[in-house]
Image (cartoon, rainbow, N blue to C red; front, side, top):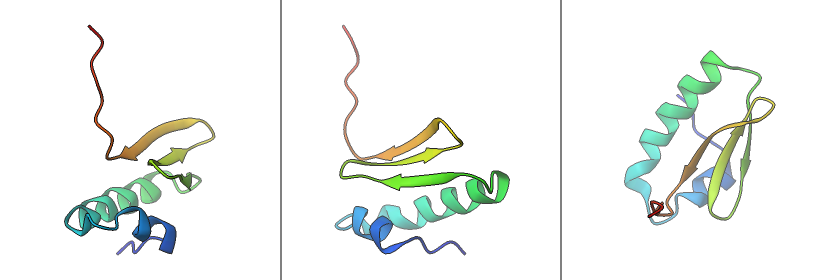
Length: 65
């Protein structure tokens, strides 16, 4: 099972209930696309191959009016 880096675990600090879902997602993603890289930032985790194709974030998305 995918365990994630310390940075990834710290990103989910305070939201431990969602971490197993993220691990399942990341494990499947890396199995299907092993050349994928990720960047852990303050507000999101970004998956690239070589361009950004997925992000994990807890920010609310506002719809345009």
